[in-house]
Image (cartoon, rainbow, N blue to C red):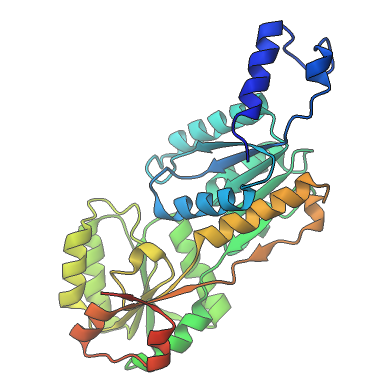
Length: 329
């Protein structure tokens, strides 16, 4: 992966006054040069957000050593969530695509697919590979001739096999942030895991989360706490203390940032998402059509056990589970 090829070529074209399509009035030395293919990565969120940081790390690991010119832009749609902000971010991304002229575009999570790929580039000649799209892509009319990728799913059936024996009953509830992505978990997990939610709570702020968390202790035996990203007024230190003092039901999650807040984690890997997407992009650059690359799903999960919370709740994990998990102390 080489970040400098493109800039060097641009400087040379500018200096010679030969801006435009290669081979059209361009000096022979430049026209005959083999420029590396361009890979543009559109990150739905922002640098520092754990999930998309993982996706980016996986992309860059897969591209390492490949002769590509690689560029990243951030839409920042976790922090700037209004429709106007998202439309503005999508327009900036579209303008970047038109000016940078990539050979393949990788997009992570739903917003770039919904606001860039579908309205402007679906069934175009420009290949796109997505990752982090939750559960299914049929609602976007994907896959199509120029778009493929990897879906992001919570491995709930596997998680339930682990947490069900720890619970006093079979009532299951979900608690998460009030946004479209998190609500998709509430829709698709019951279909995949053949379960019924005893209760669903999607909250906007920290006070609402604490109230819902306490309420669900009496309404469910297992609480799937999906994510707290984007909850207004979130205080991680206070939340950890609150969980230690309030938890009676078995809690679990599939998001790595929840490891200190839940008893058991089957954490999805953003790196797996990014790595898979980048490998698809490299195949496309080597001549494989996107339509010939089937849409896939994540297969990997990292198990976590919150030992501090387990001790407070008087729970002893099976030895084989302890040996197969990362222990959060």
